[in-house]
Amino acid sequence: MNFSQRKFEMAEEFGVETPGRAFDAAALDGRSEPAPLGTTHTEKLSALGHEADSLLAKLSSLRRKLAEIRKELHDAPASSSLVEANEQLALAAIHAETVAETAVSQLSDLARSSQRDPLTNLPNRGLMLDRLDNAIAAARRHETRIAVLFIDLDNFKHINDTLGHAVGDQALKLAARRLQSAVRSSDTVSRHGGEEFLALLPEISAAADAAVIAEKLLRALAAPARVGGHRLHLSASIGITIYPEDAEDAQRLIGRADAAMYRSKRRGPGSYEFYAQKASLARRELPHSSR
Image (cartoon, rainbow, N blue to C red; front, side, top):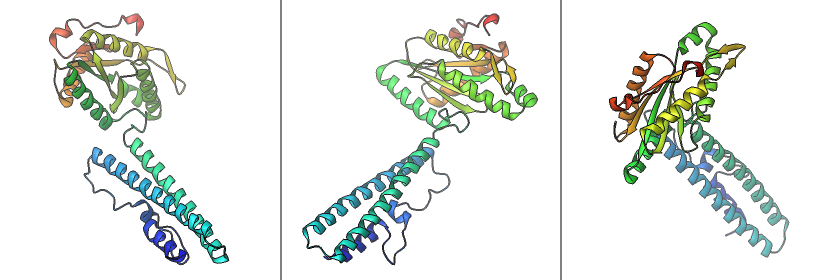
């Protein structure tokens, strides 16, 4: 097989540019038509992963074939046509490698961004559900407990209405940072929507552990804050559910934590409430002076 044939075969396989043939990035990375509307979050991430794997495999094959050709060129008698062919193949490989690395990076960025809330950069609802499902499966295997905390900022509508949505967005970012700072490295804080957040506490030994974290969250939020030149006093109402006592699936754990949060809100800002009535009896509120 001569070098001209080999060069055009590589162009056909990888979509690299050769004389008389335009470069085709889609052919290089193997991307097909966009996923249809209605594709689930997990399916989209899986498709992105498959695309990235395919792209990396093609890039690896391209490098291997280029090495083979260079070896043939090295062993063959020198000629101007062979030198030209080698130069063209090297340029094509560099072009293809650049596009491949860019495409892999973009796929990776897209996968990450699809799991993050764009305002706070916290895990979004989809990623939290994935982590909660995994935590439930692990707790079931090891016969341990987990807690879900439903956190709703108190009187947040007043901030938006009186200070504007720009200040409201900054307040949400501040709240997200403070909530994250108050939990363990093994815990997850996510933005559930609007001014609502969730905290997942895996492997707790008792409900009292969740109460300790709830108090830390309330204290973190209550620290003096200044946003956009305005002094803010943030507080939240928190509802708590425990697996497996309160529910054994993600949706019920979240829904019942939401219900407990509304009970807590009726008692006044800056407090928490357990879903289970017997746990509610042990509910503790922060002293007013510490809010």
